[in-house]
Image 1: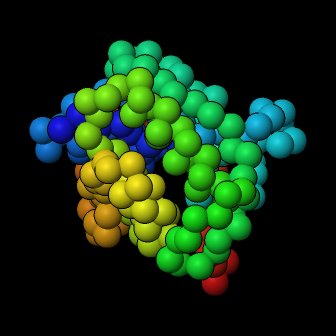
Image 2: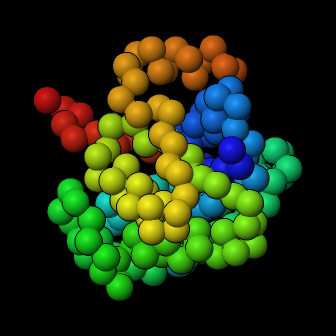
Length: 173
């Protein structure tokens, strides 16, 4: 299948592309949502859905794998915060819907979307809902993989990852 890859600039979305290719899919585009402003004080936004740190490097990844990059600003907020997503016009998920709809118009043979979702039902549910509305298949090849095994696979793949952010629920407990 021809897939668009949701990328944040992080190792998970990059490795998800590798896994998509291993599973026989072709990446036809990279898709990225970024903060409206890229000033040092505002690079990190309060998003339940999107990683905003290091998004400025995504264009280099698109150049390296020779696929078009489609980017848009995150204009919405997390209006619907329940696990099950319900369309809300000013929700940040609608930014993803609008961007993927635009990509689908420009690449009509795109059949699905791959993401680096691993443990977040919140994120996976939203990507799946957007894909369903656009009649696209959703792939999350890293979903629920053993964390130690996944890290070892990323290291074995020779993916060069640089830590720019750590985000955990209870880092000091």
